[in-house]
Length: 62
Length: 251
Image 1 (spheres, chains in turn cyan, red):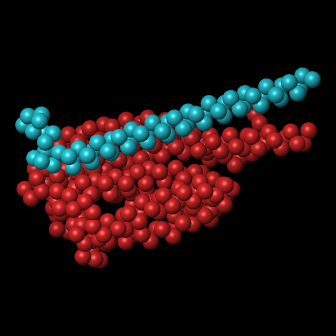
Image 2: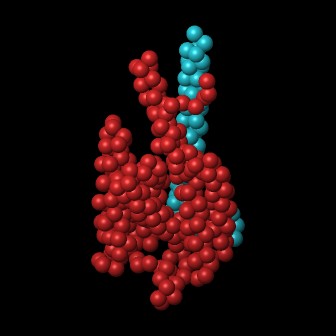
Image 3: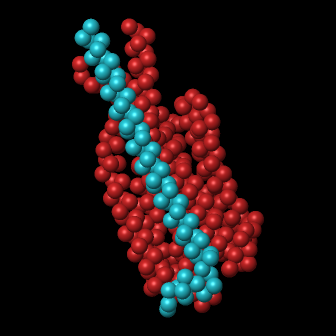
């Protein structure tokens, strides 16, 4: 079976690769989104904690 | 002055033990998902024979059936977490329910899309309003309704309660989807995965189907845990902000 024949899938290539292609696309997008969302929240929380700690320390020194 | 803030950490007691655990589990399950999917696709496309009736289009099954199973399982799981969150007010349960919804919706959409793409060469139509397809479409709307309701109500506790309630009521739809092919005359075929009359497919097809199902599970676990981590941090941020404001008011 040649490569062209494999992708042709006996005339069902559009349906098969349309299905698997969309699935792969959606999963890559979702996995990337959640990873970005986690990293963004982590950075913001760390920045916030550092900022509040700095404000606290200033208050203590006064 | 220590870095520890006077915020109610106890409220996040379960979240604080969940977070590092999820850190370890996410890469394991994501790796597992990739390995299982690669093996499953290999078996499904190179080992499993061509179907004498449907030709190659039946190979959509290895994606369609796991996606449809996931859409229902995830919904049931979401509903269980919704009950726990609604009745016992367990914060982590609410975070899990919330984190499951988008992935469940994604699998429902995939089940519908792959079903349409499989239906066209097999039945001659992308869509028909039969019981199986219609109830699966309703499942997608239930997921979207849960997510929409959750984000539409500004007060988080009220949002969580309303959305959880919707999720629990919607559970009746799951057995309707599952048994629709038995209860009604549907164009959709019955399960090709029955134990009683022996599986109506070859063992290679069955292995590919199971491998792809486990791959989908592993993927879902990894993504949902990662999302739950994000939600924990986002809520901690809000709590920290609120505690800072109340301290400023005190002083």
